[in-house]
Length: 257
Image (cartoon, rainbow, N blue to C red):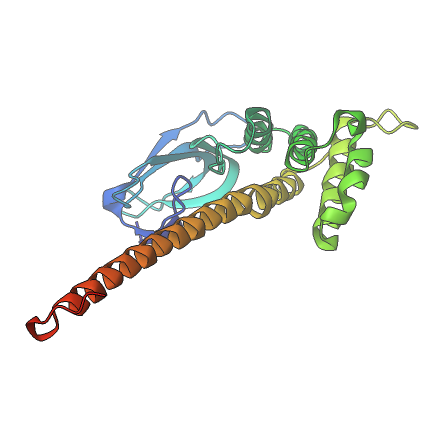
């Protein structure tokens, strides 16, 4: 197969995939289904070329396979189903500073998106409420509906992010509840669910990860100042000792006062 530009879903490393790192196999499926003949289960596995990763990615698909003869290369037609088996989902690596219930809701939102966009949206909304409560340390007497909690911290969030958060809340509500006046649940598709997950990941980066980066940077700066002051103090002591020596032995004469 031709070389393939590829980003590892495990380590995010960009690579050009050659056949040595890629295996493709096909298994014929029953031809009496409504999908007709020439249908196969295709399995593609890729080992990440990054020596610090080497993780395995596995995708399976049901698709049409077109062959013009035994010596002709296989060509692939319409895709009827595509699923990633490994990794389970493109789950962002999160710092320990994020509480486990929030991490769990986020992971579930990612993993369930290909199956149910509505369920993923509802989980993203739950994750959002956990983030707001934890990051802004919402007091117990202010906890309740997400809308009220967001209003409590509105002045701490920039306008663009605030608008996106309101959209996550709204779509999450639509995915979780029937409309009061109908018996219909409005579906949330996978692409829409992925956008909600993307906003949650943005909040992780711009709030939690940036806060941890600033803490580490501040600690490093404080340590640098302490180190420099210690060096400065040692230099002053050395300079004072040197002056004392010079004053007591200039040209062999003792000038100690």
